[in-house]
Length: 94
Length: 421
Image (spheres, helix red, strand yellow):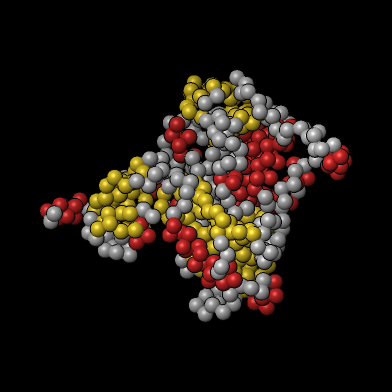
């Protein structure tokens, strides 16, 4: 079991969460070329090692999180809310 | 190499089994080859075999970082079927099934292919309609497919749970020519047959880098020295992205996920088919091996991973699915479970294609279904490498299909790799 330390709920089993995917995708502007959109939607770095990825606390607070996790050892380095403003709120309440 | 036939079996039986030669050589790497296949799994070995057999290209090496058959070749549930409906896919998998039907003779190696029928249960009128559409498309293309009503199903497999009121079994979509094979024998059979034709199988030979010249890959750095190849093929599903980035080619429409499988203790003959149960969140497939073990599996672990070990929530999911459909397994004990790393693609279909490097060819993206595909995968990958031109069946199985909008998405699940089960 992977344990994810949700900033809102505390440390929980990963089975409470749903895996989203690569958290580093930058979507291009609406008038960008098909090539750029194809790259953003379909192509992935597929990192072997630490990567930033999204998880949804779907059976908990239902917030989206950015998790830095190794895809080899499953070790987690950091967990933050997806939205930077929410991160500030979390930090101010500590 | 001593051929397997009745005469040699009797001769060796009388001589203390002392005249068998080794099944394949353990050669030192040569400096250069006409074709170097990276990846000594079923697809790489099959490719090398068909390069030599169909195209008379025999100066071929297969590089394997571990031992052959030690990756996903040994981490699957050995199911062989061809129940696909998308253009390209159904012809490809049907050809693969036809190759399976003659594989033991072709390789002079008993791959224990058993056409015991693949029985896919349905539980609602909607599911029946949906699967009828797919199986009718299969019939139109000359693949065998049939529907079993409840009465037939109960007669054939009496011990399923027919009293599940939430997901009542209404019948099954069946492919009778589908079945199982022995995974190790397929790897060894292809290795032995390819070796006989002159292919060098280089084990413990890990690729560590590439040297480029004039846009091409000139040589490959490996743990056993530098090896040159006029043409190079990748067949390393699970680690395709790693090798792709080693060649400085950027991103791929692939994510690596792990898929678990399970083997129980051996029991007396219980199940004579491959049974698939998929409803709600559950996905479960089971068959019985020749040794008597129940071999079964379920879904991915649902998060990206390169680890070849499974996580416990999926063990529980699979056990629950087993109990829902096969309550008689309740007290059976699990012997082993393991995970393999899958190339999950953005539309659930594979790649056999050229790449931005003109002497590099790609075989990747087999999702859940690499085992059954291996003969045809080798066949068409060898064809592409030899003739430079993709066969009609695989003409859209390339990296450009996403930009062109011709995704080959059997499930219609969209661009989320983990959903293409």
